[in-house]
Length: 600
Image (cartoon, rainbow, N blue to C red; front, top):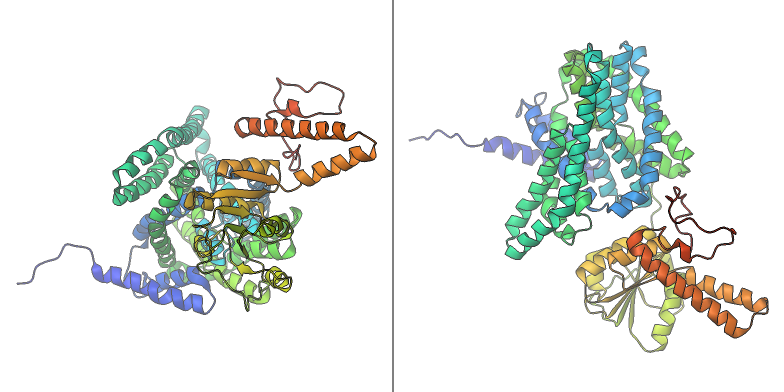
């Protein structure tokens, strides 16, 4: 006897997963990337393809959790100190790009027949880049942790923050929007600020104690559930406060970025993030209404071209204005010239208050989706025309079960000098570097240097980090050094860890990350330089020794004070030549980029 089934439609689920499994590898193989594969698969199985799914909006609402989880993982990589160091990029570069692009795009709709209010909303929505697409492509390209990738992340963060005032703008421009009282608007702002404050307080005082209790229970599935609870709870809290769910997830990640459970949380959330983010792109592909496109194809095509070209001009111009190279500016342009998922939110709000009609909303949504579909194609064309400089790794030997008393990461000028006294005393030193040319030159001088990235856990294990008594991080990349230190301290807590610091601020950052001894790369050479200067002035040897000893004492004391009090702590220990006593009871001025490291 047949039994009626009320369970999930397994056939539809199989088609959904199968389309992604087939399309994504195919599109990646021909150089178009996974995002375009997901979008194409969604279009094929959606209501305007084989109609396996007829309500993509329902899937899109669930799949948006993929974007939320993606931003949580990004937040885990953004310690507050790192965010503070990025403040000029976020509120300088990011704000400049948003404002310039709004000025360029907000008038296009008027030329296409929209009212001025509709034109402003249409253009502003296109300014908001797709965080999901850009983050995914940065990760696939291996650029997320690079400086150029971090600058793009800064712009995306500012755009995520911008959705709040833009939604307020929609309410203001709406028919009858002027009837909304000042009190109601201020109440909405206060609720949003209160939601952020509540999340910060909870993250500061509750999250780590809760995770300690859960870790003591030794139930892995409970830790996974807790990680999901944190992500979704933070997103829900921001949504209740009238803010972006993605902002809530990002803030939760930032608050947990300095937790000892950060790596475990990332591992727990990552599988859900990948599946749901893929589902998001599938749902976006399904949402492309081909009937609307067919009726308005000329308007959509013209709009996509106009918006894309003008936004490209704005992105490239701002990038060059902020001194990015032509290659970096061009790459940022092709990555960021599409509209994004937050435009859907903005257009839905405009539809809800009567600022645009249903047909206009569908057209604008189609414009955004078409631009998102075009992005992987534009990136593929860019990569063909401007390929990355390929580093020849022929003949490079990677470490395998290496054993040494010390592991030295980075064999540049600094690392080469460090290696000499250790080798002269008979210690075995395993050395890794990620520059093939440097490795080949080192080999011609009799050095054995393995090819590998010290920020990868598998390379560290293969290079013998688990058995090394001493690990020396000697790379000249500030961000990379910090990542290596955090990874080494977390995975190899018993090893003594020394690291090269770019400057004083970086030295403080490394100590907080777990370095036993940071060495600022110019400090010792500056001391030797000062000693030579005093000697040439005829100072006696004992007076020179006393002056250098006093400098070291003051520097160590100031460094200790700065660990807890910030960069301006202990400034009275600096010997100035201004002729006036340094003020102690006034707020310090905003520091310029090179002033935060005064004192080396």
